[in-house]
Amino acid sequence: MFLTATLPLLLMQQAPAGDIDWDKEFGVEEVERDPVTGEIPVEPYTKSNANAGATPFNSDAMAAHFGGRDGIERIADRFTDLNFADPRIGGIFAGHDEVRFRRTIFEQFCYILNAGCDYTGRDMQSSHAGLGSRKADLNAIVENLQQAMREENVPFAAQNRFLSKLAPMSGDVIER
Ligand code: HEM
Image (cartoon, protein in one colour):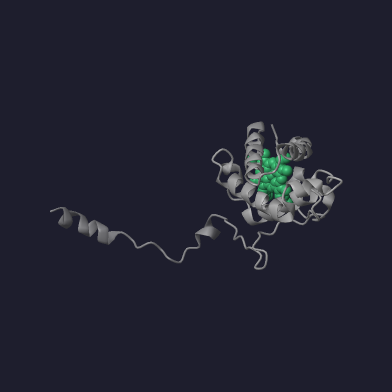
């Protein structure tokens, strides 16, 4: 009974059109990653270590506390993973280029810790403009960095010295 009543209706429905480009209809632009770096290209900007937002430590003692370049890379990787997976701030990171963040945050940390890198990313103000981050989001990020440093056994005093270098950037990375 059910079938005899509904079958004609089902047959009358039109098959979904397969030839509509819905991205085009809704104005969604295709994002193409660089085939070599795997990153999404950004608007042109002037590359400079000044964009890192802090001057490096004078000696290589801090880099040694962080386990050298390898240790810094592990910390930057872990920090990236924690931020993108963190439900407190995941909404802000969602849709941003994790590949680029992983590279540039490593460069920034490596440069500031005087471990022999240049920073090639954007400055803190322009890269955080429009994200709408608040103080609570900054606290979440700092907690994630502390966790990443703790897991690499960075001595507590060295953790705090590094955080003191980043603290003056807060006015550029949060909006309210
Ligand atoms: C002192 C604290 C912070 C530092 C040192 C920092 C560092 C950086 C660096 C180096 C980049 C890459 C810039 C580039 O792509 O050229 C970046 C991007 C980004 N940061 Fe931060 N950040 C901080 C605070 C925050 C906070 C509080 C949030 C929000 C929870 C945040 C969210 C993001 C996002 C979503 C991006 C990607 C932007 C994009 O893809 O255009 N950051 N940050």
